[in-house]
Image (tube, rainbow, N blue to C red; front, top):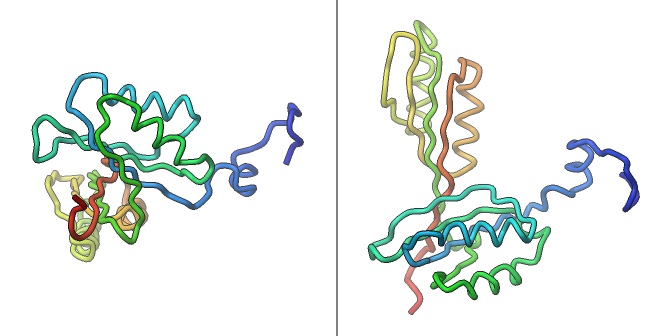
Amino acid sequence: MGEPGTKEVLSLDELEAAGSLRSGRKHVLSILVENKPGVLTRITGLFARRGFNIDTLAVGPTDDPALSRITLTLDGAVHPMDQVTKQLHKLVNVLKIRDLTPDEALARELALFKVAADGTARSEVMQICEIFRANIVDVTRRAVVIEVTGTHEKIEAFESLVRPFGLIEMARTGEIAIARGRVET
């Protein structure tokens, strides 16, 4: 790997091998905010200014129409998360932030896959759907659209199995997460 300050170009593989891109410490931030225009822009801008790459981002309403929940997943061990959460708390529209660890949270993702499936391939794809508890939501003569809900790992595993049939198109949501058990007061 190049010395600091050199102009040597490094490949993506070299950076990944050196551990510069991923640390293995995935953070899932659940941020409760006021449902107002511009809040999402201010929050994502804060991460961009600090040099964080947001892996997934999901925003949706809560049980209170005046509030929204933002769920961010990112690799946070490269940068100190406590600094970012302190700066997030300073934003006027941010009400609560939780850094959810995998053992205290339930996380799910939704994905839609359009897969080439005609003839014998269709029955094989349907068997894979059964195993993964996926739903076929649209069927044409040459393709099927499949809905899969689950963990990030489940979605990745499903994708790797249907890709050889001919993955025409794919759309994935970001992860959403909620803490297990009782709510803190």
